[in-house]
Amino acid sequence: MSCNYADGLSPYEHKGVLGAPERFDPPERVQEKCEMLADWIRNARHVVLHTGAGISTSAGIPDFRGPNGVWTLEKQGKKPNIDISFKDAIPTKTHMAIKKLVEENYVHYIISQNIDGLHLRSGITRKYIAELHGNMFVEQCNFCDSQFVRNLPTATVGKKCLEINCKRILRGRPCRGKLCDTILDWEHNLPEKDLEMSDYHSSVADLNICLGTTLQIVPSGNLPLRCKKFGGKVVIINLQPTKHDKKADLIINTYVDDVLEKVMKRLGLEIVEYCEKGDPTMNPLEGLNWNITKCNIKEVKALYDLYCKKTKKRKLEMKKQRDSKTKKEEKTEIIDLM
Image 1 (tube, rainbow, N blue to C red):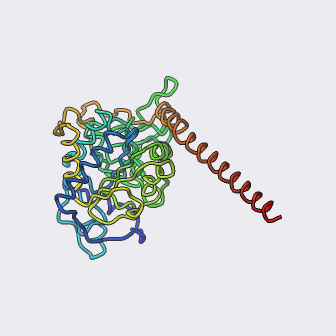
Image 2: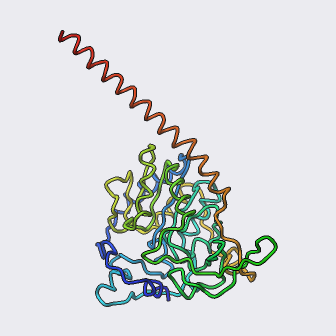
Image 3: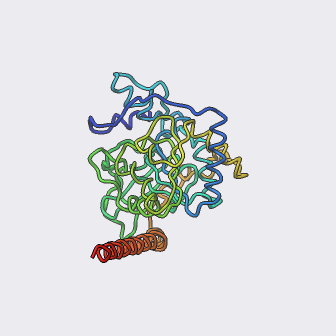
């Protein structure tokens, strides 16, 4: 059951605000906002999605901090009413819409806090996603750091050894490492390459869209704001208030599935249904490579240098001009007083 993931984590008291009431925009406002969002996406240069547990609730996987979330109910000594095994859950309308948006070059990267593997199972390739908190369907070598797709979700969480030999061949010989699950516990650092990709893409984006997350976990919750200092916009789609609502350019309070359906219609795109044929976890040949490559990092770093460093340089020049102007004005005032 998917709740077993939360049960497998170490005890931790600081889980953020739990059980905040949900709020819903009127249907006509939702429609207006979705049309605005679709137009922003159509005209954006680089769109990045930040996804949380709220995009998987319609697959039967409970969220954490909602009124009926795992940790909200845990505090009351209860368990969620809905709970499905990670093996039996399938990608939602939102997951499949995201895949289509990536294919049509409307969305350029996904930064996921989800550990359920539904992005992977929708057919998204590793080039387009950072998984900051791990993936139940991915295992990683404790020696060479190579990652591989699994047919079944891991039975453990917390980066524990699975007692499986690494599948990689190094210099003609099998790697001597052992495979571990990739699910972070509270004390673990975020995966270095995923975080690096997330930092670059969040900064380069002129449109960061948050889907189904209250943005409470740091540093992942702060990443969408990276683009603000470079002139980008932030959109938040969530049922509960979030940590960064005051800094958002647009907030849509309704179900994420409904928003994506309306946005796709506005863009003239069809949401295809999930198909096992495109699901890597259904591949009989277990062990598909799931690594972020040096080439992936090099490409986004080049974008960062192109757009963000140029902006920083321009801001620095403008500041120098303002300072120079101020000094001239002060000097003129002194001369006038003499």
